[in-house]
Length: 195
Image 1 (cartoon, rainbow, N blue to C red):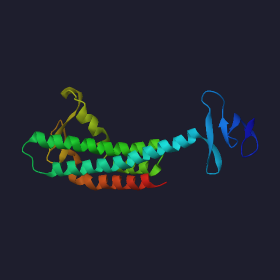
Image 2: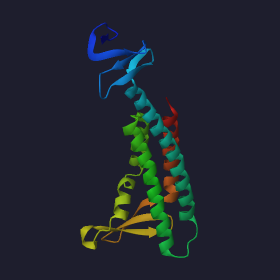
Image 3: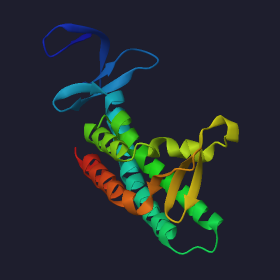
């Protein structure tokens, strides 16, 4: 038997009734049952897609809060007194990693769940802190001195770029980035909870 669409035309699916009520879409290997979603018949694969999106959304909501907590923790450590240069460099690196993870939550919300507000929030953050996007790569991938025109230096609560003339410019200042990061987190929380 063929199953017609809402407009009465056949959609080309070969369907058989199962238990007299629920149609079986397709035949043989890969056939799926159809279920009612919003008054329309849809296959279980559509219901599975919605379940997967709900799982992704739940994961991103939890990740958004987790990485914000990590950023807050590392931010406090970056602003605290350290015994040596290496300790605040370590804290700043972990701070950058945590912020990059929060950026990744926004990117995943925008691409996987198609949430425009997440993309807008990420773009706003990247406008405010344009070098943050690439900073993780600069810190993580060791570059030979002759391959770059500047170097990265660590100061308490600040990651700076020092050019060949010795001019210092802040790439990241923990105090100054705090409000932008909190805004990104808050916008993501609202966007992820919206239906």
